[in-house]
Length: 261
Image (tube, rainbow, N blue to C red):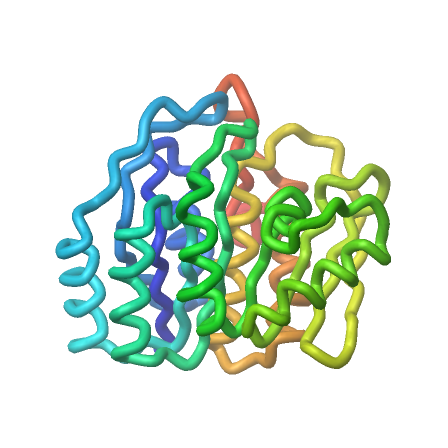
């Protein structure tokens, strides 16, 4: 059985973070494992507090997985402080997993910041150059590339700037645009555009986590980067179409929609 490891924060409400990642991996028939780097007290409406896990515990979790079980793919989510980033980086350098998907989680769906500015530069200098693919949304891509993104050409320019950091592939998600949802993938040579219908729902909590863990699952299953993104887009679109009316804010997507249509 193929395996995937999520390194991310825990979402007690179950719609995002490690919980969303493990659900997504299971839905793809991949054995999911987790390294929890932070405990986030959040729900569909707000983030209440964040408790970072001690770096030595993060290292021990990673060591426990890698010394025992072969890891086909790694998804990295919220890394909220430099100490956490460096702990994860050290173990990634030691074990060199083949596929690394980085979702640079800087903001919650409601706009609450999840990563302080002091951590962003550390992430860009350490984790990002190791990545097979990075999956920022437009606000995150603007922050990383240091530019405003207003149109498709801006997305392409931002892709080039982010790619120059050393990452192999860049996927900028266009969900913050009006109209059709357009994502752009850049592999260093070619641009690929993915356009999907925009679904009229507020229940999109955890979509970024779900997309990145779906890409990681598809890479673990042996698909190339383009097909992994394409399949992940289809999966997330279905999960949003069948999203769940839970909570008072942005409800979660339905990770198992294929099984319970």
